[in-house]
Amino acid sequence: MMPFKEMARLNKTIHEPARLAIMSALYACTMAEFLFLQEVTGLTKGNMSCHLSKLEKAGYVVIDKRFVRKKIPHTTIRITLEGKAAIEQYWKKLDHIREVTKQWDPNKKAASFAAQEY
Amino acid sequence: MMPFKEMARLNKTIHEPARLAIMSALYACTMAEFLFLQEVTGLTKGNMSCHLSKLEKAGYVVIDKRFVRKKIPHTTIRITLEGKAAIEQYWKKLDHIREVTKQWDPNKKAASFAAQEY
DNA sequence: TTCAACTAGTTTGTATTATAAACCATAAAT
DNA sequence: ATTTATGGTTTATAATACAAACTAGTTGAA
Image (cartoon, rainbow over all chains, first blue to last red; front, side, top):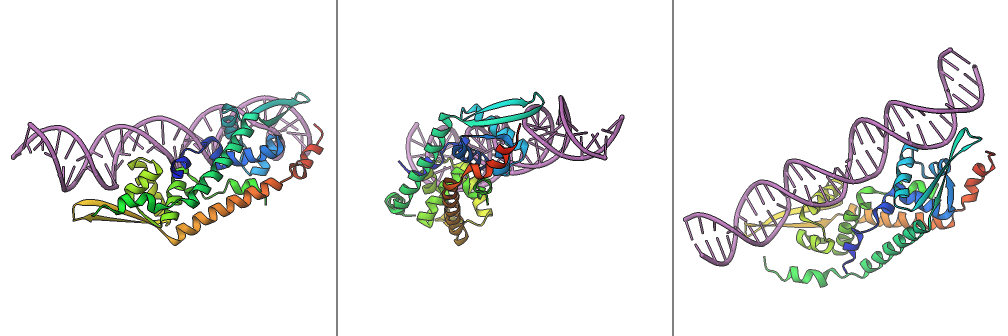
């Protein structure tokens, strides 16, 4: 199948740069604290919160909110097996597409167009 | 610098899947017809038109509209040097980030967090 | 010869989205 | 007691992707 069509079908939940950063960090960490993730990605708290919600909805992370000494909120994020699989698949697919793209010969496809006389 | 911060700063004009597909095809072709690009990317005409406009504004492509036998519109898109450089840089940066990410040790960074007693 | 259908796109509208700004609850400091 | 800081969430805004409707011309059929 045409590699370019596959590009348009990349997992967008993962593909979005901020979430790609979060997921990559979590892939290395397995689990991390909210503020730690915020620091390494450079995202604002608000954006972190939103992106994490999306990742949670997608089943890629689980968010554990607790209160330290029943007072200070403390949120821990853990990547799920599904999340690990999703990012592995994402890179695999991207690599594959790039590989195919390198070998792609436009003339094979373009021929039918070029042959038409305008 | 932290690789994850760099992810969040990927060139979004290129990063968007539809445009990544268009640019990759053009990188291989150098120049192509509107309908040809539409076919290989699987995009609708409307989306093609919008994405091409964005790429043109960014200086990554030049769009040449002419009329065949002064009647039928016929649009040719050519990637610019700037466009070629942009996509080369995009892949290069992404590869670099991935490489650094693989070697990234969360504990080096996480230590300061872990040390805090909650 | 006029009416429908097709071609090659563009424009407009809508719905999603990322991002920023404002907010909330608690704690600590002044 | 009032301000400032922490650790987030919620709301609002601005940008975006995408689809549907439209345009301008052509061709074909009745």
